[in-house]
Length: 116
Image (cartoon, rainbow, N blue to C red; front, side):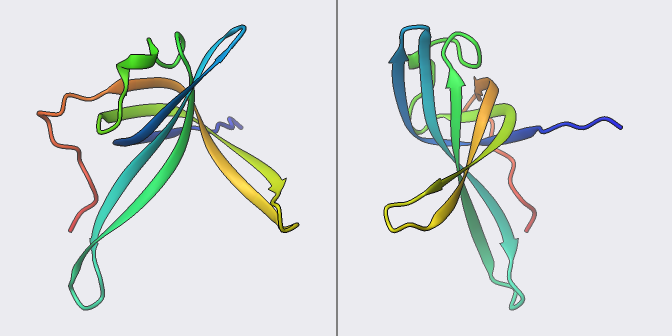
Protein backbone atom coordinates (compact mmCIF):
# COMPACT_ATOMS: atom_id res chain seq x y z
CA UNK A 1 0.00 0.00 0.00
CA UNK A 2 1.39 3.39 -1.00
CA UNK A 3 1.27 6.09 1.63
CA UNK A 4 1.88 9.75 1.03
CA UNK A 5 1.44 13.15 2.63
CA UNK A 6 0.77 15.80 -0.03
CA UNK A 7 -0.96 19.15 -0.01
CA UNK A 8 -1.57 21.59 -2.84
CA UNK A 9 -2.55 25.19 -2.10
CA UNK A 10 -3.51 28.02 -4.40
CA UNK A 11 -4.02 31.35 -2.66
CA UNK A 12 -2.77 34.82 -1.80
CA UNK A 13 0.38 35.68 0.15
CA UNK A 14 -0.27 37.58 3.39
CA UNK A 15 3.31 37.98 4.63
CA UNK A 16 6.83 36.76 3.89
CA UNK A 17 9.63 36.46 6.45
CA UNK A 18 13.07 35.24 5.43
CA UNK A 19 15.50 33.77 7.96
CA UNK A 20 19.14 33.29 6.99
CA UNK A 21 21.12 30.32 8.28
CA UNK A 22 24.70 29.26 7.64
CA UNK A 23 23.51 26.55 5.24
CA UNK A 24 20.91 28.67 3.40
CA UNK A 25 17.75 30.72 3.82
CA UNK A 26 14.22 29.73 4.82
CA UNK A 27 11.09 31.61 3.76
CA UNK A 28 8.11 31.57 6.15
CA UNK A 29 5.06 32.56 4.10
CA UNK A 30 1.48 32.98 5.26
CA UNK A 31 -1.02 32.07 2.53
CA UNK A 32 -4.79 32.62 2.56
CA UNK A 33 -7.27 30.53 0.61
CA UNK A 34 -10.95 31.31 0.17
CA UNK A 35 -13.79 28.84 -0.15
CA UNK A 36 -17.07 30.29 -1.41
CA UNK A 37 -20.29 28.52 -0.49
CA UNK A 38 -23.93 29.12 0.37
CA UNK A 39 -25.38 28.75 3.84
CA UNK A 40 -28.63 26.90 4.59
CA UNK A 41 -30.56 30.15 4.16
CA UNK A 42 -28.94 30.58 0.70
CA UNK A 43 -26.60 33.41 1.69
CA UNK A 44 -23.25 33.51 -0.11
CA UNK A 45 -20.37 33.32 2.35
CA UNK A 46 -16.58 33.11 2.15
CA UNK A 47 -14.54 30.84 4.42
CA UNK A 48 -10.89 31.93 4.62
CA UNK A 49 -8.18 29.52 5.76
CA UNK A 50 -4.63 30.61 6.57
CA UNK A 51 -1.63 28.34 6.04
CA UNK A 52 1.90 28.68 7.41
CA UNK A 53 4.25 27.64 4.59
CA UNK A 54 7.98 26.98 4.97
CA UNK A 55 10.22 26.78 1.90
CA UNK A 56 13.96 26.72 1.35
CA UNK A 57 15.26 29.50 -0.88
CA UNK A 58 16.96 27.91 -3.87
CA UNK A 59 14.96 24.68 -3.61
CA UNK A 60 11.23 25.30 -3.16
CA UNK A 61 11.48 28.94 -4.19
CA UNK A 62 14.07 30.45 -6.53
CA UNK A 63 15.00 33.57 -4.55
CA UNK A 64 13.75 35.49 -1.53
CA UNK A 65 12.28 38.39 -3.51
CA UNK A 66 10.36 36.21 -5.99
CA UNK A 67 7.26 36.08 -3.71
CA UNK A 68 5.79 39.10 -1.94
CA UNK A 69 2.68 40.13 -0.01
CA UNK A 70 -0.37 40.16 -2.28
CA UNK A 71 1.02 37.68 -4.83
CA UNK A 72 -1.07 34.77 -6.02
CA UNK A 73 0.85 31.52 -5.46
CA UNK A 74 0.61 27.81 -6.15
CA UNK A 75 2.29 25.60 -3.54
CA UNK A 76 2.99 21.87 -3.47
CA UNK A 77 4.32 20.26 -0.31
CA UNK A 78 3.57 18.12 2.71
CA UNK A 79 1.94 18.79 6.08
CA UNK A 80 4.05 18.60 9.23
CA UNK A 81 2.36 18.61 12.65
CA UNK A 82 4.24 19.69 15.76
CA UNK A 83 3.08 19.80 19.36
CA UNK A 84 4.21 22.36 21.89
CA UNK A 85 3.22 23.69 25.30
CA UNK A 86 2.16 27.33 25.38
CA UNK A 87 2.98 29.84 28.11
CA UNK A 88 -0.18 28.84 30.03
CA UNK A 89 0.77 25.15 30.08
CA UNK A 90 -1.71 24.03 27.39
CA UNK A 91 -0.56 21.54 24.77
CA UNK A 92 -1.08 22.89 21.26
CA UNK A 93 -0.82 21.50 17.73
CA UNK A 94 0.82 23.48 14.94
CA UNK A 95 0.45 22.47 11.30
CA UNK A 96 3.06 23.70 8.82
CA UNK A 97 3.21 23.15 5.09
CA UNK A 98 6.75 22.16 4.10
CA UNK A 99 6.91 23.33 0.48
CA UNK A 100 8.71 21.44 -2.24
CA UNK A 101 7.57 23.96 -4.87
CA UNK A 102 6.33 27.55 -4.64
CA UNK A 103 5.32 29.35 -7.83
CA UNK A 104 3.82 32.77 -8.48
CA UNK A 105 0.63 32.70 -10.53
CA UNK A 106 -0.16 35.16 -13.29
CA UNK A 107 -2.56 37.64 -11.66
CA UNK A 108 -4.40 38.21 -14.96
CA UNK A 109 -5.89 34.74 -14.55
CA UNK A 110 -8.47 34.58 -11.72
CA UNK A 111 -7.90 32.08 -8.93
CA UNK A 112 -10.42 29.25 -8.86
CA UNK A 113 -12.43 28.93 -5.67
CA UNK A 114 -15.27 26.87 -4.28
CA UNK A 115 -18.63 26.59 -6.01
CA UNK A 116 -21.55 28.82 -5.11
